[in-house]
Image 1 (cartoon, rainbow, N blue to C red):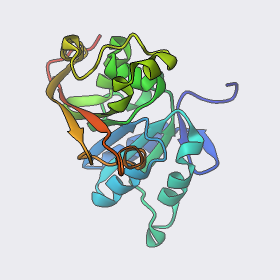
Image 2: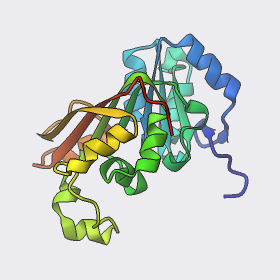
Image 3: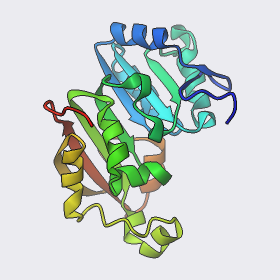
Image 4: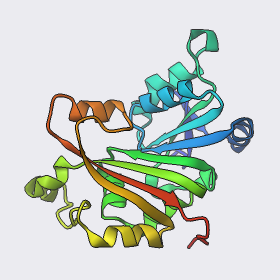
Length: 226
């Protein structure tokens, strides 16, 4: 889209090109950095920022409108519940890492859809490498996938993703993550509430028997990039 930069800070209904100096200052003030890719409404970022005020929590999503309400909340006065340690950015996952290279102590991808779901479940090595580039050595990665999608192969085919091998069983998934610089420490199907919550995740699992596939990994400290 003409006039839209690669990385835009979401301020509410307004967006503005992300200022590198602002990001640098926020990182220097923080004890650690959490990046949530495909953050959707961004409520998980607000909760994480409230939980640990010294942690910089960055939500990244391709659709600014999704994050508008959370961005307004974050920019409110601290007396009114504002969270100066929460930052919302419009960017496509395919364009990462950009200015976020090497910043994350923790990286989360929760119930992704579309291209982001393919990146972490196929997995798409080129873009998985981009996610690794977001991370500090030994950063933690947590991926949560709505597994019901993979149990319904006709539906997956209608999404144009019928070629994806079941990520809960795919023996090449762990190898692909390793090539991208992640050591998978856990791959587990969970029924009911997952250990990391998001508004979209709660919507998916509330009152249902839907399963979540959880993939936990650690950024390999000896990774040299690609």
